[in-house]
Length: 198
Image (cartoon, rainbow, N blue to C red; front, side, top):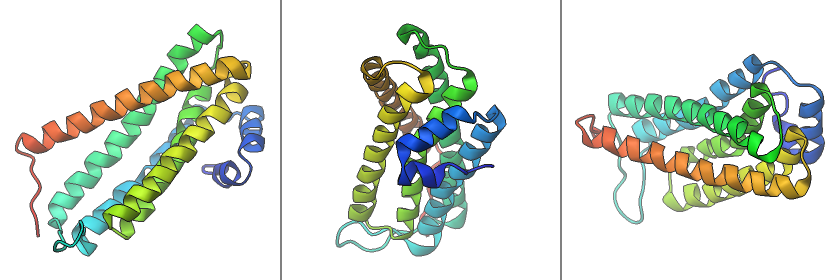
C-alpha cells in the first residue's frame, strides 16, 4: 500500500527499515510515494503564498497572485520529484563503490523514505513565519539524515562502518543536488518568469 511505511519510520525507524527490506514493493509503489508526498510542500506553499501571505520579521505580509503561486508550486513539485529520482540514481550508482548491489527499487525506496520528513516540513508553510519554517525545516533535515544513516546498512546489506561512509557520501551528493535545484530556480525566476505580487 502506498504510504504504508510513513508512521513506522517515525515510531520505530530501524524496525520499519527491516520491514521495507523484507517486503520490497515494486518501483511503482516507491514512485507513487514520492509523487504523493511531494504534493505536501507544493500545495501548502501555494496556499500560503496566495491566500495567507508571508511575514518576514516585522514587515508587512507579502502575497503572490494566484497564477504566480501556482507557477511556483508546480515548479516546486516537479523539482522535488526529479530531485528525489536523481538522488535514487546517485544512491544506485554509488553502491558499486561500497560493494553493494541494490536494485533500482531499493535505491528508490531509500531516497523516497528518507526524503519524507523533508516533504512533511511543507505543512509548516501553513503558518508562514520565517522562524517557524526554519525550525521545522532544521528538524526535518536532521530526521531525514538520521533515517538515511539508519537505513543504508539495512537496505544496502553492508556493514555499519561502510554504511556510515556510504550515507555520508549520499548526504554530500544530496547537498550538491539541492544547490543545483536552487540555482536553477533562481535562474528561472530571474529570466522573465518573475513572480507577481498581489
